[in-house]
Every structure is written in structure tokens, then in C-alpha cells.
Amino acid sequence: MAGMLQLRKVQILQGFVQSVARNWPQSMVSRNKTAHETILARVSVEYIVNKTLRNILLMAYATTNPYTGEKLKTFPDATDQEIQTALTEAYDAFKAWRHTSFAERAKVMTAAAQILRRDIDKYARLITLEMGKIYAEAKAETILSAEIFEYYAARAEALLAPEKLPVANAAEGDATLIHQPQGIVFAVEPWNFPYYQVARIIAPQLSAGNTVLLKHASNVPQCAAAFDTLMQEAGLPKGAFRNLYAARHHTEVILSDPRVCGVALTGSEGAGTVIAGIAAKALKKSTMELGGSDAFIVLDDADLEKTVKWAVFGRHWNAGQVCVSAKRIIVADAIYDRFVEMYKKGVAELKAGDPMDPATQLAPLSSQKAADDLLAQVEEAKKHGAHVEVIGGPVPEKGAFFRPMLMTNLHKDNAARLWEFFGPVTQLYRAKDDANAIRIANDSPYGLGGAVFTKDTKRGVKVAEQIYTGMVYVNHPTMVKADLPFGGVARSGYGRELIGLGIKEFVNHKLIDVVDIDAPF
Image (cartoon, rainbow, N blue to C red; front, side, top):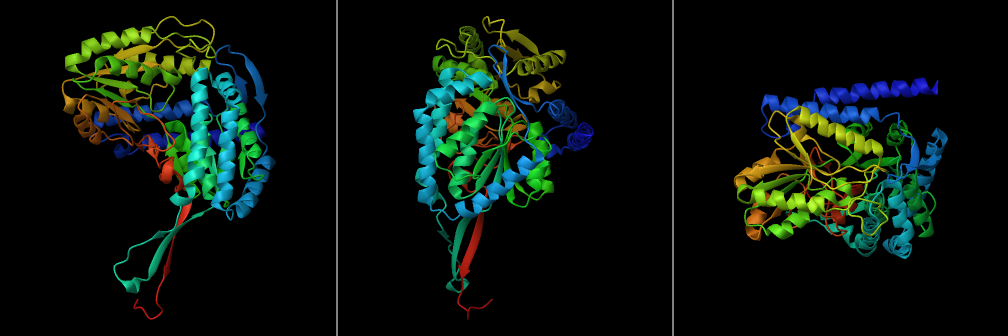
């Protein structure tokens, strides 16, 4: 019976997402597209949602070491009753937590940061074990997570301070905008940064007085559980944050609950389409940080040696499994050949191996399935005319490794140019001038980040201003810092994470206006 119910849920979901793909508005696909190009983009949408649907019945939470392929531990899905208990405990915690002082909340955030710094080796090893990240990068992620907790411990009160509003005349009264917590925030987070993604939602939302329920990716269950333990040890009241090994159907259960005020999702475009639809049906706010196909623009006056080093790093850190990775490299015609020669050499020198080995520079992908899916994308691109060259050095036979590839000859009729390749596959384009580089950069349905490299920073800023994304860096790959906002536009999602923008996503911006009783209406 349970299997039949699950199958029916999948059938309903399949109909929903396929309807989305068929009716996807041209404005959401890309700007100023021809009818032919729009069809290609819709094919891209269907590819994404169908890929998501293939995973619907594969929600089993398990730790599988990507380097060895060994399945180490499995975790059962939460029961319906466990979900209801978590909702009740989270809302009970909210009723008290919302009234705590900023100083009390800051104490918990500071403690969480201190624990992460103190036990950095333990936390970092868990990341490497579950999703294969190079150990040094896992340690850097742990520190970044601590910095996010520290940022909100120091600044939450000021960020949410009441704001006096200027009014046209005194008769309008004394107007103040206050920012109040609203309830439970549901967080759906991915595996590629299993601590950072959680820290950047729970630190601001707990600091604002909300409580949080987490549904993490199925391949990082121990990282998710580690944050449960972390927050308990930091002194957070019971129920205020909880990791749930939620089944697929629990998402709708949670978002339909009136005690839940919204959902923050970081993940694929397919997942975002489904979750945003469920949230909309329940009239709940959602923020979506989805895919990206960032442009890495190299102008003709760039410092080539330094730029190539950043390009190699920007495409291959975390094995290329980063939403803001430098996926599309666009190089000025005058330096194109030299850049390609240097880039190939730099990629070929990356050493693949054990992610715990300090000498390793290229880690395995998060799973063998991820590697297989990426290869299938590459093969599909080749069928439509793309030229693909393996440019990476040898990789171990064991493990979910993927040799870096370079993809060129991506013409207008190849839908693959609109896809996100989540791994070490570089799309390379030649630009005749700055205007052409901007056009190529904007020829994407995504709008997350981007980078421009030039010795003339004014020129770089001018180019950056014309790129339709949420973030552009000049002379640096897109990066993540605790004190900088993060988010995108178009099919990369909506809403912002971090700083004041992030902490205000799920609070009630309430106007209080004290007006003289004799003032005119």
C-alpha cells in the first residue's frame, strides 16, 4: 500500500514538472531568444526536471565514500509521526526563542563557531568522508561556517534594528518599521557544501528569532547529524533546530503546516521547480539558490599567467561541483590561443587522488552516479556537434573520478550550451571584443555569478555592470564570504543569502505608525 501511495505521488509530481517544462515562459528561459532557441531552452528544462524525477525513488540516506565506493552507513527515512513531533517541538521552541534577547542568541552563535574551530579536524573529515571534498577545502568550509555564525553574533541586532521612516509631513505620524520573526523556516540543502549551506541559513534565521527544520541531501546524513549535535552543544534550546531524514512526500506535509513560514532551498533547478511549486500552493514564501553557469571573461589586457591560475582553480575546486564555478570561459580573440595552451597545461598538472592526501588537487565527484550523469551530458553535447577534449591527467581507477574535459564548438543549435555541467567540464568560447564577450556571457538561462579579468579595473566594472547575474567579481573568481551577499537571478533563483539581506528574508517587516488622533485621514 505504501509503495502504491509513493508511486501515485511520483505520478502527480511528474505531471506537474512536465507541465512546467512545456509551459515554461520565454522570459524565464532567456532574454531576446528566437523561437528556435526557446525550444532548445525548453528541451533543457525538460532534461533537468526529468533528471530530478529519476531520483525521486532514491531518497535513501546513506554514507558512501566517493573515493572508495564503499557504503559505510545507512539511515532510515523519518516516519510521519517523527515529522509531526519535530514540527510541534520547533514551534514550541519558537514561542520562547522569539522573545530571547539578541545577546542570548549571539551567545549560542558564538559557541557554535567556537566548537567548529576547536573540532575542525573532526568536522572536516566528515565532509571528506561523505562527499569526497579535498581535506584542506573541507577545513576551509568549516572555518567559513564558523565565520558566518560569528558575523551574525556580532551584527544581527543592528541588522534588525527598528527603522524610523521619513514621512512627507508630520500629520502622517511617527512611522517605524520593525522586523519580527515569523515561525519555522524549512531548509532544503545540497551536498556540495554540507556545512556552509546549513550555516548560511540557520545562523541568520536563528539570530532573527525563527526556528529551523533541515532536510539535507541524502548522501551527507552524518554531516547533517553533526550540525544537530553542534547546535545542541552550543546551547540552542530543544527543537529550535533539527535535522530530519525526511522522505520526499514530507516536503509537502511540512510546507502545508501553518506553523511553517517559508522554505529556503539550495539545489538544482529541477528541485527548485518542485519545491517552489509546493510552497506557492501553500502560500509560503520561498528563496531559491539554484544552478549556475558562470561566465569567466578574460579581456585582451588581462594578466595571463595569474588569470590562467585563477581559471584552473575556479573551474576545478571542489571537483567543479560548485554552483558558482567558472563553467564558461570566454576569452578575447587576441589572447585566445595562448590562454588555451596555458589552461590545458595547468589542468593537466592537477593531481587526482585521495582527498585526504595533502598533495591531491582534484577530488572524486560526490558519487559514481554523479560521474555517470556528467559523462552522459557530455555525450549528449557531442551528439549535437560539440567538440570535447580530455585535458586532465590520469585519475585513479577506483573512486568516482572524472578526467577534466574541454568543450568547444558549441553552436546555437546545441542545447548543451544552456546546461550546467556540474563537474570538471569547461565550456570555452572565443570573443572578438568586449561587447561580444558580454553577449556570450548573457546567452544563458542562468544568472548566478561571474568574473571579469583585466588590468583596467574601470573597464572591468563597466563589463560587469552589463552581465545579467546576481554577482560579478573583477579579477577574482566568484567567491563566498560571510560578509558578502549571495544569490542570483533568472533560472538561478531568487532571494539572497547572508548579510542583512539574508537575515531579513523570513521576518515580518511590520509598520507601526503613531498618529495624532486629530490628524486628517
